[in-house]
Amino acid sequence: KAGVTQTPRYLIKTRGQQVTLSCSPISGHRSVSWYQQTPGQGLQFLFEYFSETQRNKGNFPGRFSGRQFSNSRSEMNVSTLELGDSALYLCASSLEQNTEAFFGQGTRLTVV
Amino acid sequence: SQQGEEDPQALSIQEGENATMNCSYKTSINNLQWYRQNSGRGLVHLILIRSNEREKHSGRLRVTLDTSKKSSSLLITASRAADTASYFCATDAGSNYQLIWGAGTKLIIKP
Image (tube, rainbow over all chains, first blue to last red; front, side, top):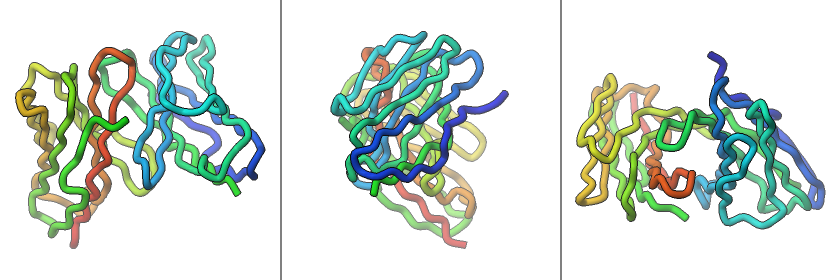
């Protein structure tokens, strides 16, 4: 069974640009969550989608958005990039809440 | 927000020794999960323990959960160099579709 796939693995963008990250969950998993990981802040929850519906959103500005498609693949978008958005962005899929989450390798975003 | 607090923040031991990491949390939970992360890569799920369980084993890993103290411990026995990683606990409170993470314990196994 293929794992969670995140693309791209690495990304360099300049301030003010926007970026779209992609996540393909494990087949059959309908829940996809996104996290931002930075050395100072640890893992911070961005949002969770289930069957194309956003069920929860973390405490991030509106520049961070996401969506989920009918095949459960998910994208997250960050607009008007800031230096502080540099981080490892992790996607996780699971069958449902209260079950284990499987993570992708992450997308390392550097904003210059 | 972070619910879990791992202790210690960093741990360095000799290969072959046992490593124990602790996690405390603040609210009632449905389950608690432990994950491992190797140097800036994705997280790997280790064990999920439900709130009605007290102990769980997986290979060289042993996890305990004390809901009265809101704490959990992860024991790695007979450590190996490949166990060098950061270890995170995450709690699922069941009400808001997210895992709440601790800051992690950085484990270094010296050969």
